[in-house]
Length: 289
Ligand code: AMP
Ligand code: MN
Ligand code: MN
Ligand code: MN
Image (cartoon, rainbow, N blue to C red; front, top):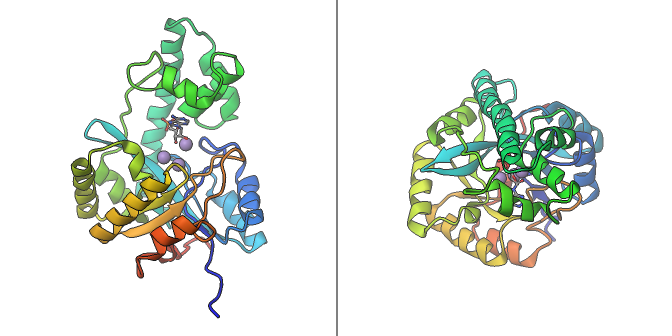
């Protein structure tokens, strides 16, 4: 009789970026959902990690300190997860502060552009949803829905916040190699987040992976809340072919998102467990005491 495999969820957000739950609420919800090992991976910030770590200790859940870094690569924005990063690492802290500086400017710029398109007050509205944290596009989307300009967050992105739409501001994020350096300086492991979401051609994705590996990256997020079943199968095959580690995370942003598990999901289990050595468990080396 084998023991039940641990339920890993290596991608989640709190109010420190664009999630809706505080770190305490997030870790409590993960624990209640049966997650054994949770990575908190807020966009470009480490702010929620101490609070999440304290809560996790009290509940007996293992918290992996993480971050989701915004990267500009070949005129696209991609997301690179740093798992098991040391939050005290100066190079990582200073690097992320630069990205947040861009975010602060970008939020005001999105507000100005939407105002020019005839929708005023969006910056202020988005600030309300960010509750004192850095304002991201999700907060604009939440405000625009609340103000009656669209029916859903998804619709706001499509109509206002993506390329060629009135509130779009081009991302000026970290270079890939730079982000990988920060993660490795902090002792962490780098994982390409939700690779199927970038809609890259197979050859472009292979080029991304080649550069990612050359810079020290080790993992591909195979099971993700934003991957379809077909995406999971395709990314599992790619991951095996490239001999990368397979990661699994729901990309949880709040109670509207399901927790995804490769343990309870038959399909995910087949896709991820076929690897043998390639399991999410490889990331299980917390640095926070
Ligand atoms: P930002 O990093 O501020 O540019 O915002 C990116 C975040 O917006 C992602 O992490 C998602 O949480 C959210 N997002 C991006 N595209 C969409 C979409 N089409 N529908 C809903 N949320 C989205
Ligand atoms: Mn997000
Ligand atoms: Mn992402
Ligand atoms: Mn995410």
